[in-house]
Length: 282
Length: 273
Image 1 (cartoon, each protein chain N blue to C red):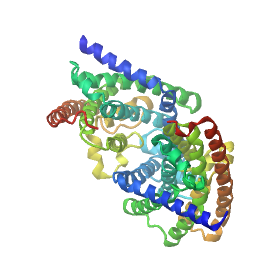
Image 2 (cartoon, rainbow over the protein chains, first blue to last red):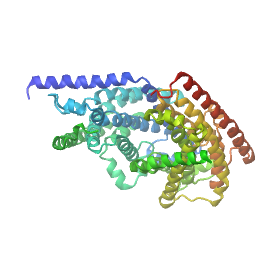
Image 3 (spheres, rainbow over the protein chains, first blue to last red):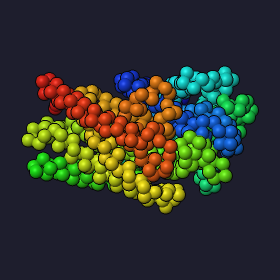
Image 4 (cartoon, rainbow over the protein chains, first blue to last red):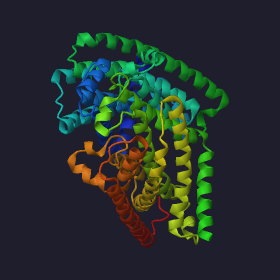
């Protein structure tokens, strides 16, 4: 592939990102939800934690610490929900972008352009990062103003590095989902099911050791598990970049695996779609 | 009699529509299970000492985590029925373009809401029975027969929620982004009713709001009878407060709905999407 083709694909990737950014801007009421949910959902779980711990009963707190490695329920929950929100915007956004193109009748037109198929597959993910960072900032402010938890500066910086390291794996997972949804068709139930399953497997609201062994094994091949765990280590236990390096290495490996799978699945589906003519179907 | 037949016809239509979408029906059971019940049970169990959730016992007077979570789901489901199946259904008709023909029938507007309430209650009961069966079979849920004493409280709360549904229907017919509004208010209403944690844990400024909701009392009465939890206040006072809030909510909702309808007729916005 020559440099000209690469440059063309990069320009198309930028245009795809710009398009989804414009769509975000066109629906300003979405911002209400992007502020409401990242604050209210974890806040409710923090209060549930207070109910279950008897308002900080020492025996109950010790039990929780022995399973989660921390007594900081508030941050434990907020970090988990940061991942939940990321998963939500990932699955509802880039995860369903191809299917939405298909529903609006523009997928065939996109596929007729001479750009690489990877552009429509990965293009919408670029602006999704905007939501992720926005939600992280909202949650950081909420945890401080509502619960008086001041985040350590070093931990915050390391959190952004972890998010950066997790981006390829998370979006590769999103692309795999996006390709699968194209075949499956029904967006809503698919998002609910996958988000629910990942929330349960990756320790969003509870320590993973609470899960049965088979589920714990499954969680080790899910990128959110490593992101959540590494951020908790950084913010709650003062971990250093070296401490979270193994998690970053796992994330890199998972990004290659999920990215490869997404590309293969997408090619198989595309070939099948060309034969059956399902690209334009609603 | 005609109104009764119309209400039944609306309920049958709603039940039939939902039953055509098998994934939707399945998600009524599995979505609350994996998004609410399972994470709450596992989170609560993380605080257990020797298999006993001592913290919860200290907070509400019982260590029955499964009972606490599943019964929270009952009132949460009732609230969701009022918000989505009743309140939001008019908006759905509006989006489908069937609101004007429905409005032009000689059926009273209350019958339209009550018909939807009946359809919603059918799916609510279906979901609750399935969830209780799963809870009993897999999560150690044990229900005391005394919980039937809470049925009058749940009936009263349902009547109050029909009033709330009228109010919501009035609002969603006049605003554009009804989906986000219903989603957020449903969440806040259920949370303030104490479905996830006792309302005494709410910040002080929010507690008066919780005490103004009929579902707060219904939730507390249900947990008292079913689990033996400590009551928020004297049960007789709770029943009186439940009756009072119901008496206020129902006509308030009707009044708001009538006002919204009148405004839409004047402006001719009934058929606008």
